[in-house]
Length: 250
Image (cartoon, rainbow, N blue to C red; front, side):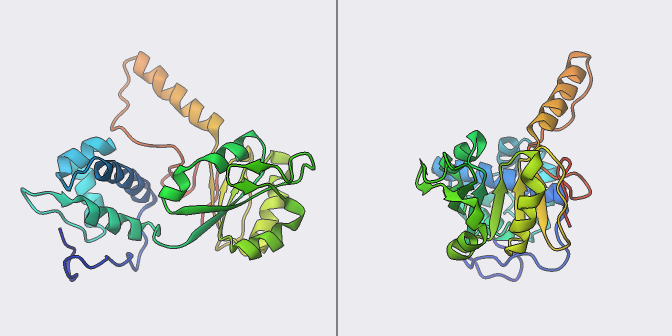
């Protein structure tokens, strides 16, 4: 499989011009996860039908999404798994050096810091911060909890360019403002509140309660015979306007 105007085996370029629709970007992450699974199983080529089934979408949707990247399979042969995986990684910006700081070392923050899957997906967790004197200095996984009072200096030292906020609502906006002032332009928030960020900063919000409410809605419809439609991975996926559930995006 090769894209148009690209030499076989050459790493694909990131898509230029108009950005992809948010719903397509969300599905690309699902395709990438499925491709990683195929690679782990030693699969070298995959048909659009098999990749679509593994991703929980229709094959027509999959082909349409991939065509927006200029990426096509070979009829009767399918997609070369590693090449397509590389193509999607570049398109999603995962070949860049993403250095992540987690602000908030409570139960959620510690669980995120211990999660080993970030590294395998291109994200290097470089700092874990908190304000609680009883937590500061504790070791969590491979990190030592740092004092959030020194957030700006820590971000400079670790070259943080992405932040995760695992904070209570009462302090989330103030900390978010400091993170933005420190130069970070990509923020993922687990705080149970709507945060405001300036233009040029991308904020994604993950609200567990909202996701459970959405599940309850679909479960109720299923029990009453309603149609749920095509399967989709909606956790953290943007709405049609580019905003996450209750979040902000430019």
